[in-house]
Length: 107
Image (cartoon, rainbow, N blue to C red):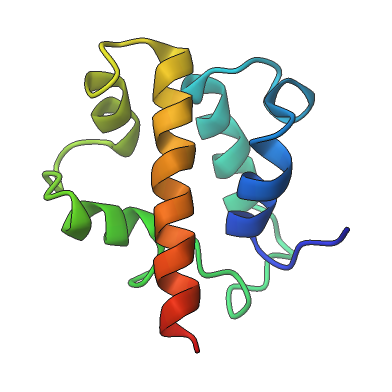
């Protein structure tokens, strides 16, 4: 199956097979994956809603009142007692909430 944006790819592929895409089940490895994706020259920002004003990190900052000065990875680690594997699970749970919110807005 082909995914048109990073959010769907993360939720429906990486979440199921994190070791295949990021090496281990750790949030710290996902950061590198997302950074690499963001730097791709061929990224079509019009189709990809993960980034930007209505993107996941902006939504998460507003929805969960996270300080803008905090990095997103530190937020998830702090709320998972610095357990990288639990932080990855929390990240995917929140990403799914965002995806459901975003797709309901688009209807």
